[in-house]
Image 1 (cartoon, rainbow, N blue to C red):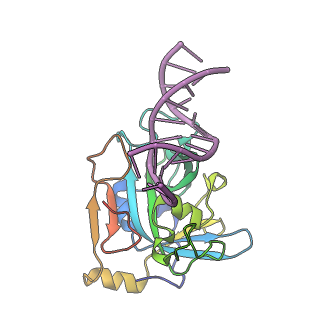
Image 2 (image 1 turned 90 degrees about the horizontal axis):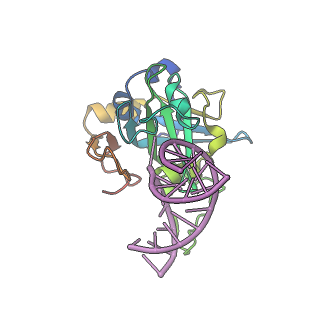
Length: 209
DNA sequence: TACGGGATCTGT
DNA sequence: CAGATCCCGTAA
């Protein structure tokens, strides 16, 4: 189920749909990060959440502001924000120009622990690969994503892009060896009941609850 | 200009 | 379950 090899990059128009459609379609796709030194890191997307116009949990719910203005733009751009003063979250802007919506990428399945991450936690325990990009904050940490990567096109010429599902994943999904779960979103105070979170069933990287 | 809260994570 | 830590939206 883990994709080690490159697949076809997803072109921008693919993201030009309502976020609740794009979010489940992103499961099984690979998020790819090219670092300044040329190193490329790939991870399979296993958990996503959708945010859309009229949704009280959406950063753009009230109005357009400097921070959320990227969400109003054309689909296929990154929207990165800082949360709790210490973590970053990565979104993909979706839907038509003018409609503020995005998909939060919450977890990745990595194939290896990136070499800039210590293989041991602070308490000394060995980190599991499955948990390195488990959660939106850890995901950005594991791929060195910060505010400098916001408002970038998802394209192979850029520091971030997304690739289509591997043939293996497509087969596994169509034969029900892999399935998705749809449920409510995490960590919100508003829009708590909207079931716009999707994840790959049985994946260790997916948030509990 | 000041203030308070947040799409999180870790250790107690 | 509290604390870390800072940007940004809202109110003044």
